[in-house]
Image 1 (tube, rainbow, N blue to C red):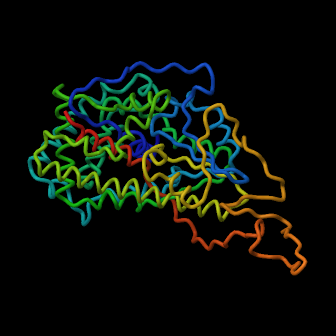
Image 2: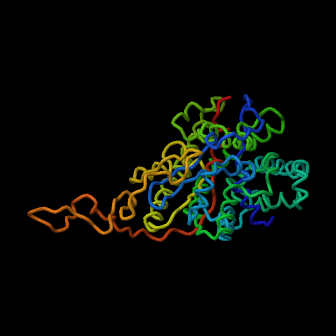
Image 3: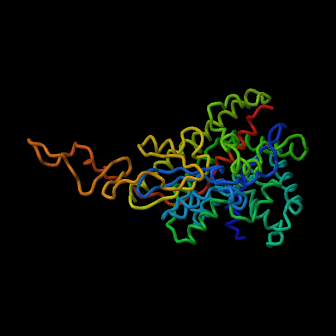
Amino acid sequence: MQPNLALIYFIFGGLLPGATSRRKQMDPGPCELPRSQGELNSFLWTIRRDPPAYLFGTIHVPYTRVWDFIPENSKAAFQASSSVYFELDLTDPYTISGLASCQMLPHGENLQDVLPRELYRRLKRHLEYVRLMLPHWMTPDQRGKGLYADYLFNAIAGNWERKRPVWVMLMVNSLTETDIRSRGVPVLDLYLAQEAERMKKRTGAVERVEEQCHPLNGLNFSQVLFALNQTLLQHESLRAGSLQAPYTTEDLIKHYNCGDLNAVIFNHDTSQLPNLINTTLPPHEQVTAQEIDSYFRQELIYKRNERMGKRVMALLKQNTDKSFFFAFGAGHFLGNNTVIDVLRQAGFEVEHTPAGQPIGNTTMLPSHVRITNGYITVNPPIWFSNQLDQRPRSDLPFHHQPKSSAAGRLLAPSITASFYVAIASFLLSLLRPS
């Protein structure tokens, strides 16, 4: 595994687990593959246009854990689309270099210089524990593929003393036994990107590195210290056996495959958040937790969904003759103020596509009639005769031409996907009542 792929796995595969007080865990057993396609979960939506475009909700786990449960019509939509776009370009070295630069403390600073002494000491002790446990967490299959514990630790946590505290917090959440055991297999997003390249499809991204990095780096220092301290407290309690992870990667996989994903991680994006406030926190810490939640909800969910939706629209308007497959984290299509909502509000017709329904299973218009971005056009134009005026009338139906769109060029590829899952996990673990 190349070092840059290790970093991709860190961002896309290791940010899920958090911790909370003990609760009843969901059945850990794997779900059985349904007998018919119609019984599978579907995270596919169709944008009604000719040719069609598709939205597909991914999950940032090894693709082998979910591939058999993805409906055939979702795979067919991917195969049929000439262009495949992701949140970021997972195969572009700029993504990796931009991310690495964004994570670093400015001016050559070191974590030891910026963190309170006791917090730094606890962090260093926890990472030493992880390094010690890593050989025991790895699977025989990983060892057989040539993965070594020291290499894996350095790929994920290397140079940690130079990183910003918020990124160290996310790194700590990725260093769990469950997630370490999943390393070495491309996550679903990366697998789709590799397949798209192999099939010589046009690929691209709808976000830039900076658009993902800067919101995380925008937390004020006291909020970052609070978040890092809470994360360490959770992992220290996990080590002591007094806490359990609330939603593990296994839970997420099971709900993606045969449950209700919206009811697990992504229920964070609901109006019921006040009911999740952990009343065991002191009042001033509850305020801080709510401030962090509000900031992340606005910056990493709502603003991103708005931006992503607008760039999807720009691509569709600029490429009316091309089919598209947009593969984003499922959280961008679930809850409130989603990418789907942005498209619908702009006049696009977006429909959920159940498993088992043939793609493109819609009533086809005659070849000379096309619906493009909400406008009906006819080629050649037609009009109705009138005894007083037989000239073409621009105000008549079917003569309305699409407004020209001078949308600027899409910004270059990006970093991160589903920071949302990472942040939702952290906040859920922090805010869920005991």
